[in-house]
Amino acid sequence: MKSWIECNARRLVVALAVGGCALALSGCGSSDNVASPAPVDYAALCTKINGQQFNGITVTATSRIAAAGGNPGYCKVSATGAASTTLDIEVDLPDNWSKRLLQQGGGGFDGSIPTVEATSAQFPLIKPLVRGIAYTASNGGNRTGNPADLLTNATAEKDYAYASTGITVHFAKAVIAAFYGSAPKYTYFSGASNGGREAYLAAQNQPGDYDGIIAGDETMNMGTQVTAMLNIATLAGSAAMPSSAQWTAAYSAAVAQCGNANGVILNPAACTFDPSTLQCGASGAPAATCLSAAQLQTVQRIVAPLSTSGGQLLFSGYNWADFGSMFGVGSYGGLGGGFAAIATGNANWLLPATVSGSLQANFNVDTSYPVIAAGLQNVGADHNLQAIAQYLMTGKKLISFNGAADPLISPRDHLRNWQTVVQLAGSAGGNARFYLEPGVGHVLGGNGPDQTDYLGAMIAWVEQGTAPGQLVLTKFDSNGNVTSSLPDCPYPTVPHYSGSGSVSAAASYTCAAS
Image 1 (cartoon, rainbow, N blue to C red):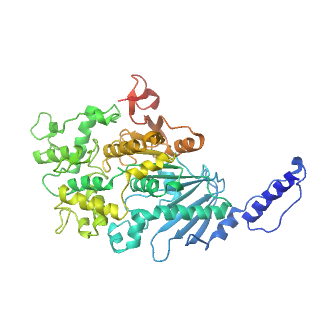
Image 2: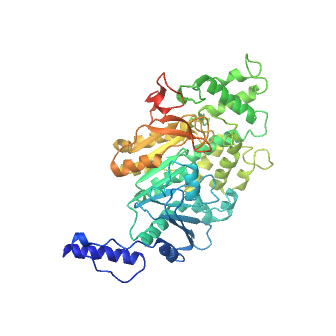
Image 3: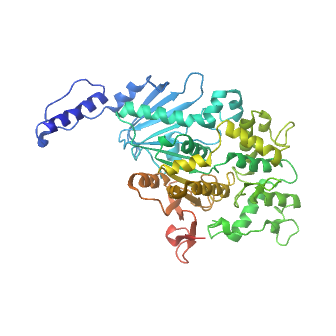
């Protein structure tokens, strides 16, 4: 009798899931005669969910994507937040659902949704749909990617600052429950750059919503990071600012002294390169890219700790990186100025230092930092390290990472703040890991291998209790072929070449203390 009841209970769930109302009760005698449940019509479910409302948000479109290229079939759900908002959300629902949900963070000032297709192409080791993981992401409440638009729309500013993360995950969970008939068993967040900021905000603001959070290339203190950026951006257009070619040449000189045969600095903390060797007139200084005395001071400034005149340490400085690249000093005014404008409501922070009326031109650490830091806290765009530690103390897991040669977000300051969180968490600090990716730039790119499956490591940690240790970093060419690999070492270890074997193969290295 019990088996007959259980059989028909299963049939009822399937029937309700596909919108049917009739129960097929035959074949429920012995286990030998139990018929397989009718296949779920995911295409019909996808169509049915269109126009429905979840958590006050209406689904504006759904589309059924057929299985192809190793991906299962899936339903793409599109929605826009409450009336008069510009928060756009996507949820992707695979046929092979594994009862997991992954929320992906954005980048910069957003402007568009990081779709599941784009994320899978950018991070080919992740592949959430192949793993049967439902996926969700948003545009952060900003459709243009222009921070100026946030200054004239209080709702959009609030969404970008912090609120879009919670709105998105709660909407996605409601959609999933309606589509599959059950809520996710495990929920993960992954993001880097602004997505890393969102990841840490998720830990501090909504710890109950996530089982594991992956946060990359964001320092956990945007107030000090923005201050460090503007401290350099204020020199834009002046004789003290090196050219892009000079910045790149300085990095190449550091790599020549500290890097391996592939141009990767394995242990940035041990690199003692002195840029004064590049000053014009110094023996061996390259004529085309040598530095004036004022330019040398700027180069020295960017890698040095930053403090107030009273001695308060604000920022640890940068590792050696290609500051002449796309995410180098040329981006500091746009990103730093954008966050300063959000913090203060003053659009003049958006003006480059070379433009009349620019607040960047008159930037001063002592007077500007307190205003910017307080403003970012007031709008909810910055972090509370104690709250992130509390997330760890509930038993939840955190994987942090940073490109060791990131020229935009300081890996040194990220690590410093991560260490503070671990100390605040006490014995629960063991629920956190930090990975410093040798030679990697901002999120991706650079001289080092730049792809790692942090999601797989997090799933194993949360669901099987297997804490992550040494991982593998891989570099692919444009055809998807592996060109090099390195160990991805958990802090405080770094890769050490064993003395034999290819310098391009992770097997030739071990992770050991620096």
